[in-house]
Length: 238
Image (cartoon, rainbow, N blue to C red; front, side):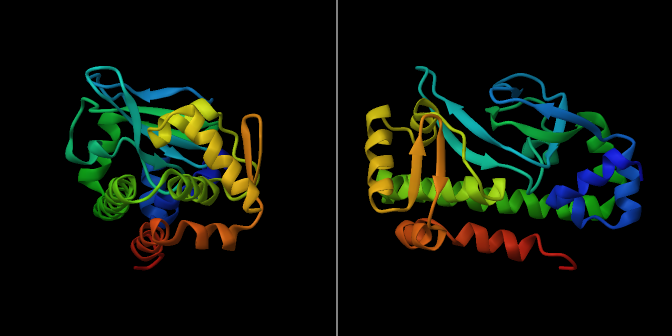
């Protein structure tokens, strides 16, 4: 295994693969750097590559015919994107954009499909990763319907914190308004509430979680179940 590919094991899906399976993929994994704002899949356009993030985060964004945008899902180093490739679908149904600078490994669409057919363990782990992502999407829909913006923001920040491993979360108010499908003023108010409760420290373009346990209690049932499913379904030697 070459040195650059050792870092590919920072991706949870790739890390779960047996050595022989991983080694069979290594030649087709190209390290890439994805800066904030990079669009890795566009609505109704062909998917050229599959990405395995090792750092950073990105969003699956739904755009309505009238031009409104909202985040449907968040992804990081837990699996692969776009997940529709698992079914052989070549045309992306949604936009997928990097929101925090990311390191990743890219694999051509055709090579990923070939490896899925040749490597049963890759297919098994990839299907588990898709299920984890679908659980997240379901809980996002439930949270959007049930919880107020303060709880939804707390949930979303916790999800980012999970994928970034702590530290500052560098996001603008405008971006947060898209992610939560609310007005920018609502984001500002929600940030002030979380900050006033001592849960976060917010500055221009950056949020720091100060009290993670209290933040989880604040988020209540909006956070936790998809994360438990991830730990269960993406556990080693499952």
